[in-house]
Amino acid sequence: MITMATPSSFYKDMVKPKEWGIVGKITLSTLDLSNKNLHKLPNELLELSDLEALDLSHSKNMDLSNELIKLTNLKLLNLEECDLDTVPAAVMKLPQLQTLILSNNRNITLPDEMSSLANLTVLHLDNCKLLTLPPVVLKLSNLQLLDLGRNKLISLPDELYILKNIKVLRLRFCELGTVPPTVLKLEQLEELDLSWNSGINLPDELSGLTNIRVLNLLRTSMFTFPPVVWRLTQLEWLDMSRNPLQTLPAEVGQLTNVKHLNLSYCQLHTLPPEVWRLTQLEWLCLRNNPLQALPGEVGQLINVKHLDLSECQLRTLQPEVWRLTQLEWLDLSWNPLQTLPADVGQLTNVKHLDLVNSQLSTLPHVVWRLTQLEWLNLTYNPLQTLPAEVGQLTNIKHLNLSHCELYSLPPEVGRLPQLKWLGLRSNPLQALPTEVWQLTNVKHMDLSDCELRTLPPEVGRLTQLESLDLSANRLQTLPAEIGKFTNLSYLNVDGNPLAKPPSAVCGQGITAIRQYFEELG
Image (tube, rainbow, N blue to C red; front, top):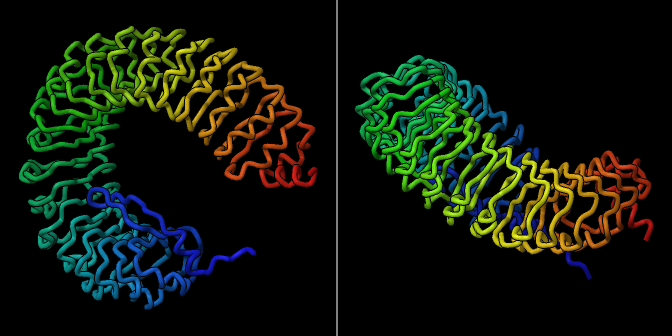
């Protein structure tokens, strides 16, 4: 006898822990009903008294019942892009609510009754076509995060300083010509996002915000940065990416507390020596700057864990790079390196290594001894062969060997028990070793354009597969096991001369392929 789930248990089973990036990160028991086009809440949902977060985003014309008050533990409510012209009255009856997301409700008004939300600490109003700050916001005295991004030319009232608890203010894409004077009075502010405000002026008074730890100046069209930036010596996180800087002044060395520095896409040809003296740095991104070379001083960044040097026109790397033994994440992709020295083996803590299109024809054997590796991308390198030592990467979860001119794979590839993502696109393999079908934890496998003529029944062992790309091969038949994959949501067999199942069936997708094999028995 099959027992059908009751509606209440159906919704209860949908509740999952989810990490929300609010003020910091917090995990809440969440019911995700986004994009469900619900017009009203099911009564059964209101029985979920332990629910902490409810996501109703992209639900047009939603009628929120006053019964919502039964959700006494609800801390977060997401009503993004729900075509709201005002905040539903039911929301005002949730005094325990801490986070309210109203983003992308254009022309929404905020009623004065919202002042009853005494515990509200996070309010998202980005892209609501606000010209001024709704007055009721000034009555939300416990607000810590206020997101007003993408409200073009928004005017902020002088009284904004009343919000004594504001720590995070987001004003990206607001077409601001200068930092609003009222913002300069928020002495308790810790994070300020001014990104995508082209040509914005940063007044000297900004240095008065002595608690600022995070400053986002992404794509503000600055050729040079005002000296006030370098006076914010308490900064720990600074994003200056996608600005046509070309050079940095020596004053950057004053940011002695910075841990996260993003200088990607800045047209920098050189960096001042002072950059390498920022010894607190843990995260540094220099992507897409025509640096061509790095000085030996890079070795002074003894605490760096994340280093992105991709697309920097580097032909060689100083030996000091390989002595950054705290590195866990290294991207060297799209540099004409041609060779890697054996010194790379010193990076014993590296978990993520990206070497896409580095013109490598061989790899030093020490690469395969980096046993902490979880993510390795070797795409677009003319390797031609892969050594048996690849089997030593017992912690690898993501391995991309696409476009590597590989004619065969060693059996040891099948000894990667943690592997979940395998990319072999565009290699003239023609066949795969039987050991590949031992990768029972793989969820994504790309075997497209590999000149494969057959796919054995053993593929059925890969029961965790969610995505399988077999396109542009020479397959005439698919094994019946393909139809038995219960987790498979994506299957691409385009560009194969298939007769079984016929191309017409395959063109209808995975459901039709399953039905075809079921009918065959």
